[in-house]
Amino acid sequence: MKQFWNISLNETVSNITDGKTIEFIDVKGIYDSYVGFERSVFNELLENFNKFENYKSKNVINEVKSPEGEDLSDRPILMLVGLDKNDLRFGMLLYLSDEDVVILGLWPEQFFDAVKSDENVLIGALVAFLKAPENWKLVHLGLPTSLEIN
Image (cartoon, rainbow, N blue to C red; front, side):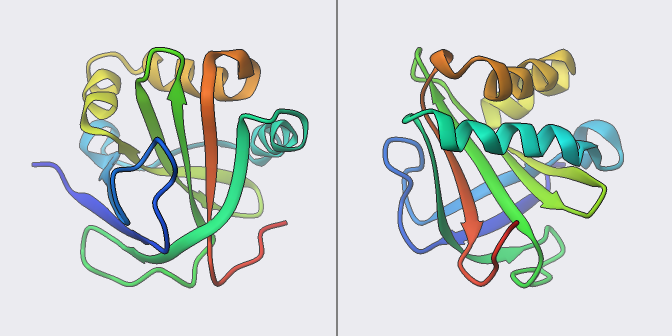
């Protein structure tokens, strides 16, 4: 059974999200635990937001609820969502720790299901966010309204 992270936004993310709430499907439904990548990879991704006009970031996350209903709004949890050239949507809910970045959830369901059937899809999406800016109409990094990320 799929578990959901419920994210409340203070505004819609233009052309990507349909409203002010977004449900990321918990990745434990695929991996039995959380997976992640090195913080240096995330730092490299952040450089794209200074280089490319189609990469935007904004403080839009008002509230984060875990699948268990716990309010984690005070944690460094952010969302990376994108709309590719084929109008396909991709999203990852990320937790930033000092050493690494943990993927908590995936969105939308089609992306989750694609990763579940082939785990390389997740790596491919991460590489595309990082190395293929021309593949995206828009990439948006949604930050918590209550936190400064550095």
